[in-house]
Length: 103
Image (tube, rainbow, N blue to C red; front, side):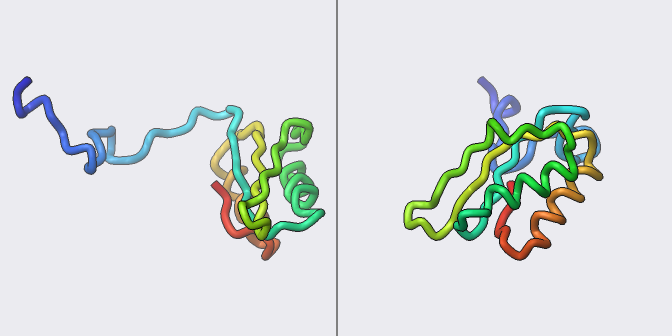
């Protein structure tokens, strides 16, 4: 192996235009929503998600409490149709004041 075949893994690899890879829409898109633990937190998240993905089925969601029970994460998968949909969904979730992070 020569030095030319090695690359520093701390630096991003070569990409077209220097941008991250694009998502091909429509696609199934996993989301994790983290917020303060409450009995209605998952229901609130699902109500918002349905507004952005009317075909969303809440049967497959996972609600995971934090170790100390202060937070909950709601893991779900939506049918993403585009970046505009995802941005609007993320913005509405954060606007509740109950969501700390959307990943």
